[in-house]
Image (cartoon, rainbow, N blue to C red; front, side):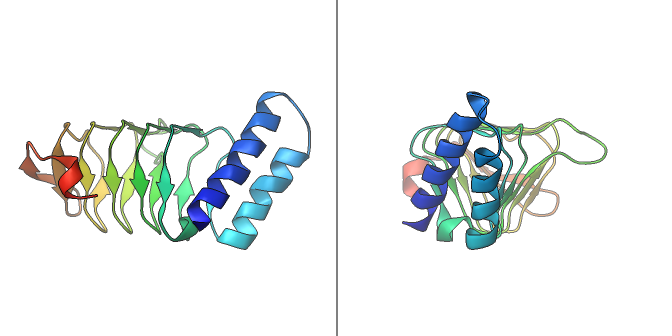
Length: 149
């Protein structure tokens, strides 16, 4: 429920930002950061039916990230660039990102994949795969995402 509120406020801020209305988008992003402890950069492209677990508590998303439809993001997740690779991740549709996962650098997370809790993803994730560990490695392939949601 709180995740939907965060995303609703974010979508209003993004709409105002896209239409070059000053100050209000920045205020709304600051409101999300203070009230929900969630840092979403103004410019993230969210797909439909994205879910932020626990209201996005501790979640940090870089402002250039693209997130597809039906993605579930747990709390304390970081999605963004790194010093070595300033490019940011692209998360395709139907992905489950568990609590505490970090997705850093120029990575593509394939459709229907699962990022295990506290994993650090530094390389591309194939479609329909589970990755786990630090750094994350494929532990299972050809999964059905509906078994995990």
